[in-house]
Image (cartoon, rainbow, N blue to C red; front, top):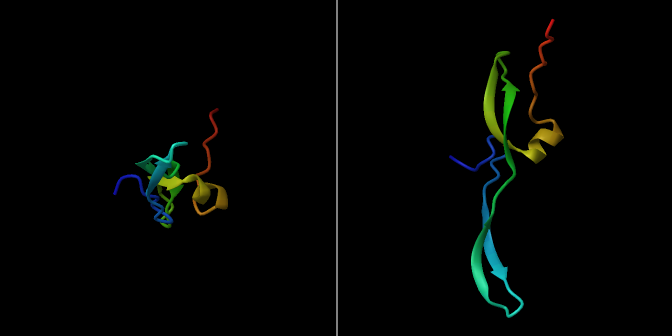
Length: 69
């Protein structure tokens, strides 16, 4: 599904914008998702959409960058 972290399952949450006059309109908070290349258990790399918290926590193992000679 779109806008969902493939590691932790974080999704958009809903709530209200509240103005100074206390008017309420609906809004959504979207997770900060990034497309990242990840090493799978078989050693291959795969592109996935994950939230920045999973990237920072080390839940995503990135492939080693190749040296250009």
